[in-house]
Structures are given as structure tokens and as C-alpha cells.
Amino acid sequence: MPLVKRLTVIGVGLIGGSLARALREQGAVGEVVGVGRGEANLKRGVELGVLDRYCTDPVEGVQGADMVFLSTPVCSIPGLVERIAPHLAKGCIVTDGGSVKGTIVSACEPLMPEGTFFIGGHPIAGTEHSGVEASFATLYQGKRCIITPTERSDADALAKVVAVWEAAGSSVTVMDPVRHDRVVAAISHLPHMVAYSLVNAVEGYEKTAGDLLCFSAGGFRDFTRIASSDPAMWRDIALTNRDAVLEMMDFFATTLAELRKLVDAGDGAGLEKFFLNSKLARDAIL
Amino acid sequence: MPLVKRLTVIGVGLIGGSLARALREQGAVGEVVGVGRGEANLKRGVELGVLDRYCTDPVEGVQGADMVFLSTPVCSIPGLVERIAPHLAKGCIVTDGGSVKGTIVSACEPLMPEGTFFIGGHPIAGTEHSGVEASFATLYQGKRCIITPTERSDADALAKVVAVWEAAGSSVTVMDPVRHDRVVAAISHLPHMVAYSLVNAVEGYEKTAGDLLCFSAGGFRDFTRIASSDPAMWRDIALTNRDAVLEMMDFFATTLAELRKLVDAGDGAGLEKFFLNSKLARDAIL
Image 1 (spheres, chains in turn brown, yellow):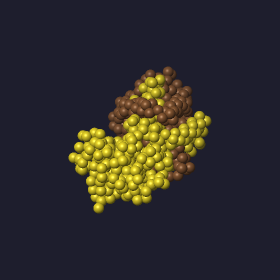
Image 2: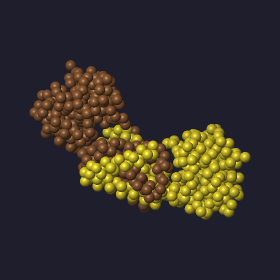
Image 3: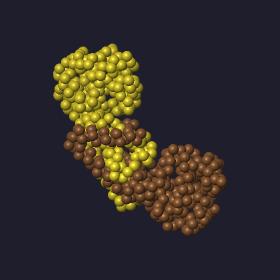
Image 4: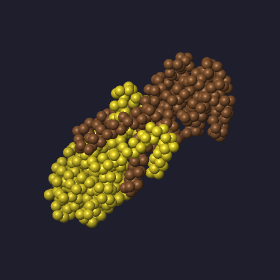
């Protein structure tokens, strides 16, 4: 018997499609039902063998599912859970792939009827492409996945979600939602806030100082790649992970102010130490 | 007759070696003399055909040269010019490849004896490798090179330096040294200060919050690549381009503070606008 008998994926794109593909390849899923608003994408999902069938109504889509995976934009998740919750089969586990967890978990957990479970998750994987067409079975292979239960979480439901992500090839870490949000604020959300600000600063300066960006070499382009990310997605992340993002932005601003002081003072030894510390920390994660 | 009869390259690494190779391939140089402190590197330069001969004494190396190219660390350039200046042949043009121009040009120009010329330059090209072994003839092909004369510069000397970089394949822009320093502060020095600060902030936060960096995905690694740059080189840049770097750091800090305000206020429309503006500016330079 497969790990999941009937998996309903709401939002069949890179993340949801790749999870379905990975579980299929491992024989870990019986039937996959896709739910979404774009029918062309869902049809393509069936053609590609990612889905067995699809529907556009979430309530219809979750009928008889023993697991529901939500891979829609972060802000839409609590509303979707509220809508499907009364229609879930007994024992059904709802999980998600949203990149913020605290606000999602605390909004969704109380919505679950007796005998159904919400366990938050966040696979740290992706590419710059989107849609089911971009999905592939090995996306999660060797990648981290963070699962965020609370003290109210059911142990069996947690074990099942962990097993699903391990079947997909992920290396799973379990941590509480608040710590998760701080981790991703540091390694992902802060860098995005910094990159967006850097490009806006240079672009704003260009307005007063004339052509600048035409002189930018590969370094600037590489460094600012993440400033080309989807504005609506990052709006949602900044809104839903507000406290951790603010905390990290303040931490960063303090560090930047320390560097400013060294530059202002012309403190050669201090500057070299500051740069070396950073170089060593970065080289250590390669 | 070649554009340059005898070129002396002081500091035969990626930058100096690649210029010599490019000019040789174009038949634009007669003889290339290398000067440096590392004899193994200079010998290798001769073996590779980059140099015709070498010596370790700059004064001996510049004898009879009609052009001297300095590609040593920024802070060493004025001292080297002071040392070689009395020994230059009449008509000799000294130029450099340093990534800061204001302090270099104002220090070097007054050191030049009557009938010899200093013209600052900055090829915007490079790789992560160094040493003559890493040099190649097409490094400057299609890349920008900024030449920074002053109102005291000799027109023929300027034209010659421009012609040399065009022969090497560069697209040459002429601007005054102060404007150059602002341009590179914006597109290169500021991103480095930001990347170094970001890694130090996350690493500092990790000390209080536990493992973070182990969860970092490709995005963080790519974004912070420039934080692995040579600390001594960046110390020199921060010391010599102090005013422009401070100006850009302040401009950036103001922009970051604006974003912080939007995050704090939970201003979804403002956040999306901020991110979209950045995305559009970045996508335009691709």
C-alpha cells in the first residue's frame, strides 16, 4: 500500500508538481488529484502524467483524500484551509509548502475539524521557472525540507509528513514555526530585502547622477539576480513574516553601520578584519 | 610601427597579463617587459609568451619604455609612480588599471616630469582567478574601460591610452576621476560593502540563534559570492574611495530604511511597488 493513497495538490506548479512526480516515481502515492484555477495548466498536468485527474473546485478536489498539499501563494493558504476543512475525510492530513510558517500554522491549526490534522512544511528548493511544465521528480533530491509542528500536533500525522518528504528525497529538519521564520528571514528574506533595496538605491542615485547601470559588470548582475524575483510573492512574504524580517533588517542595518564607521575612520586593520570575517564565514558554507 | 613600441607592465597578473596578450595578438605592441616581485610568476610570463623579458626592479624595468602600465594594488600605485618618474624616457605615458581613480590621479599627476604623462584608467573586467597564468587575450573584448583624464592631461597622451584599450577590444568611455569613483562606488563598491555586511550580520545572528547557514540554498550562496573577494584589496578600495563609498552607503541605508517602514506598516501596495520598481530596473540591464 502506498504511503499516501490519494494526494490532492492545490496549486499545481513547480513545487506541487515536483512533489507529485517524486512520490509517483517512488511508488509512494496511489492517486494524485490536481486543483487549481488555470485549466490549461491542469490539463497539461494530466498529459504529463503528473496528475491522474483534476478539478477547479477545492471542495470537490479534497473529497476522499488522505493528504492535501497546498502549494499556492502564502497569503491564500489560510483562506483555502478554511474552505476545505469541513469537507475533509476523517484522518486527512493537510500540509503546505509556504515559505513562511508562523502566521500560516497559527491560522490553520484551529480551523481543522476533530480527527484531521494540519502540519506546516517548507521545502527549500526551487528554480526560476514556474508552472507544472517546469516540475521534475528530482527537485527535492538532497535538498533541505523544514517541517514545523507545534505542541498540539499529532505525532502520527507529523511522522507521515516527514516520511512523504523523505520519500521525495529531502533531508528533513523538524523545528518550531517561529524558529523556522527566523532562519528563513536570515538566509532568504533578508537577502531579498537587501537586493531590492540595493537596486532601488542605485537606480535612484542614477536619476540624480546620470548613467551608472550601463557600466555594471557581471558582478552587479549576479549579485542582484534575486531582485528580479516576483514582487507579489515577496510582498506576501514581507507581510506574513513581518516580525522576523524586521528583526533581521535591524540586525543587518547595525552591521552595515559598523562598517560605515570603519570606512569613515579610514581604519585599514578594522576593514580588513571585517572583510576577512565575512569571507571565512562564506567560504565555510561552500 | 606598433601602437606601443615598448610596454612595461608592472604587476603581471590577470589584468596586466591580459592587456599584454591582447595587444600582442593585435600587433599593437613591439616589446613587453614585465616587472614584479614574484620571479616564478614573471618566468612563467616569459614561458607563456606574455612577456619578452622581465626584471624585479621597477626603475630598471621602465628604461626606454614609451608606455608603462601599472596593475598593482591601488594603494601601491602612487609610491611606484614616485619611484619610476625620474627614470622615464621623454614622451613616456604612464597609465594604470586601478579600480579607484580620484586619489590615484591627483597623487600621480604632479609627480610626472615635464614631457611625460600620467593618464588614469580602469578596465571593468576580471575573473575570480589571478596571476599571469589566468590571463587571456580576450578578457577585455566587448568590456567597458573608463579612462579618466583631467583638465591638465595631454590630448595626444589621452588619445594613445584610448587607442590602446580599443586595440585590446574594450569599449572606452572618458570621464573625470571624481565621476568615475561615484560610478564604481554605486555599481561595485557598494554591492561589496553590502555583501560583506550581509554575511557578517547572518553569521553574527547565528551566534545567538544557532544553526542558520546550513539551511542556505543556492540563492544565498550566489548573492554573497562577492563576499568571498580578497579582503586586502577591498580594504584598499574602501580607504582610497572613502567619500564616494560613504555617500553610496548612506544612499543605500536611506533606501533600506524606506523599505523597513513599508514592512513595519504592513503596506502591501507600497511593498509591491518597491519590489516591482527594483525588478524593472534590474531586468532592464540584462
